[in-house]
Amino acid sequence: MTKARTNASASPAVGRNILINGAMNVAQRSASVTGLGAASGYFTLDRWLLASSGTAGRLTMSQTADGPNGISANCLKLDCTTADTSIAAGEFLQVVQKIEGQNLQRIGKGVAGAKQITVSFYVKASAAFDFVCELSDLDNTRQISKLFSTTTGWVRHELTYAADEDDGSSPFGDDNAASLNLTFWLHAGATWAGGTLNTATFANTTNANRAAGIDSFFSSTDNNFFITGVQMEVGPVATEFEQEDFGVTLAKCQRYFFQVNGAASDRVGIGGYVVGASEARFDCVMPVSMRAIPTLSGSGNAHFDSADDSAAFAISDMVIDEAPTGIVSSLGLQIATSSMTAGQSGGLRFSGDATLTLTAEL
Image (tube, rainbow, N blue to C red; front, side, top):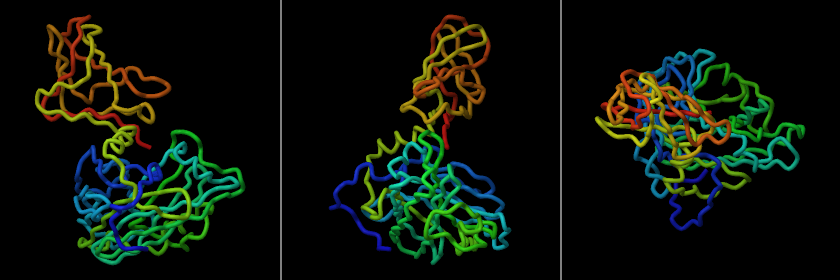
């Protein structure tokens, strides 16, 4: 464990960090969401899932400009707004990043020659706490956990996890499905914390051993938790945090989530054509290829403007008409409305603060 430090003179370690948005720079959905804790979801910072179950505790999750100097201007902040001091067995609160198997092949896990994994991060809190950082192999139901401590100042932790050769037949799947979870455990009942923490080697998962010994983030409404500069790399040595160009990080995040935000009468770069009096189709090209065929959602209303018509519709009524079976770089979208003239082309226009969202999260 070392104190937070700058890395202005460090040589770059391009591509070492397996994680995405470790600097907490990208927050496409929102910079802050209140009242969280009743359900799991991606609420603020891209690629960082807030997972919770069973707890009466509530929190605000935000992107906050309070990162350690020279590492990142931003951090993920959790602020406890409702305490939960009566912890039922099945309760938990986690901050998680899910990782595709095809991005983990350099580890060689589960076979001869498997490599160690080192996770490093900068963390602080409103007081001294013990929490857990877990690596969970989803393909083979194996895991390993390490305790870490917080203080009221930024501290960098460097945690090295043993190589897992297992029986030689449990590698990560080489595909676009989730194979590994990096999980920060911040609150857990006896189901998850009632055993002995599994720290030495990867082992077949015993739930009670995953978060044993942790304190509770929900112990008081005075509690805050901050984290940034999160890095996972191959080998036993933690290098300086990789300073990645914002545009590169944004593109990586858009593989999983892409949102178009509008304002009143904004023109959106999605063109379309009228198939019949009650149907129009759009050609949507994403900024990057998405992980899989996304789920479409949205809020607010839009118009399809053609030469003679301006048909109104709710964005939530738009559906995916067609999508490629391979690399998902574009989609055919469809809306059903009325009073349109077949054969005319046109474009999408937002009404008010509407949004169009495409999600392909793990």
